[in-house]
Image 1 (tube, rainbow, N blue to C red):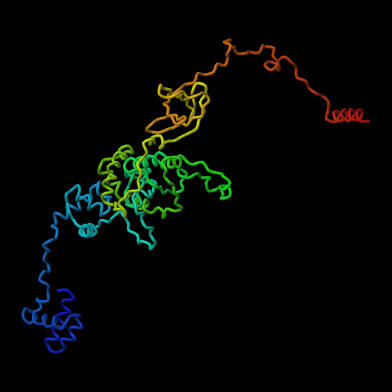
Image 2 (cartoon, one colour):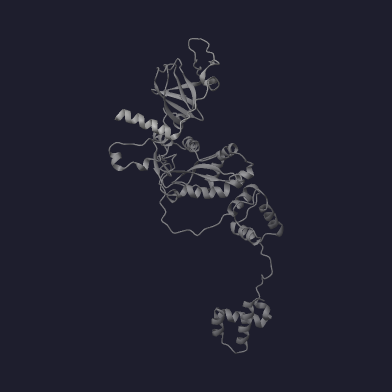
Length: 439
């Protein structure tokens, strides 16, 4: 018997002996008088054992057996599962091990055996959340995060974009460091899968915004002074996408929470899939996005999408690239990054005139192209011939000075000159010369 049952027996015994009224016993035990009489009847008939619950010391019919529990605990200790949080571990058990168990039962089993979830829960602060956009494609939050995705001490940057209305991940791409190439590949994935969005919401990194943009005053802007756009800003302008800058991480909270979720799940999923390099990770992420969105994406408020199809006259490879302005020489050759390239003419395209200003397009998918008056030309590597230092063809021999040259053997040919006059005699001579000249 536990303490509660012993206390009930003591109070009920006083009622049976006539030392306590049933109403007072009911208040003391926090029961109704009817319940008190029922318990007294049981004590008179069966004794003190009537106060013990009939299911005491009996295993519930729906409980797990010890073998099942030990199997789950052994799986939790596996290298591929040990770093996953409890919710992710439950999903992995169902997907990969065909084990179905509720979260509460799994949490009780793991915590009672000394396992702790690696994902710490913090108390949420009360703040006003911005309402989601009503249509998919109206606002895309974009960002990158460095993390040890492969479980070692090396950090790699994962670039990503998420739809504000649906919480749907529209692009993921991993590189060694946060860079323009990673963001352009995320935009490429989004445009090919969904279309062109209305707005892109980013931070104030120099990839998105020129560092001198904040130094231009309103008066200077009214006078017509402008700041050159970054390569990313130029690409968004060509796609017709508005670029909005966030002034704090909290302003783009959805993509920040996405990093929190991915940092808790993706390393385990990469380990299970045997992914150990950036190239393998980018191939894995192409399919991973779909399974991730099936668990976390929501339906938008309005079913009509705000994504626009890419116009046929626009080439996505040429837009999502790096562009520079160059001037060709008389042979249609230009230089960039200390290398020379020649513009290749074709029958369909007219030749580029001499000394023409062209736009050089550098893309990982399209290579190096040249744009001139709306036409795009291919290029080839060109090695300029070295200029001859003797254009007349005369052989130029090395000049060797003669033996009697002063600068070569002067110290041996001529005797050194010494002055025997003392310091006082020199001053006297100088004074005499001065008097003769100015007397």
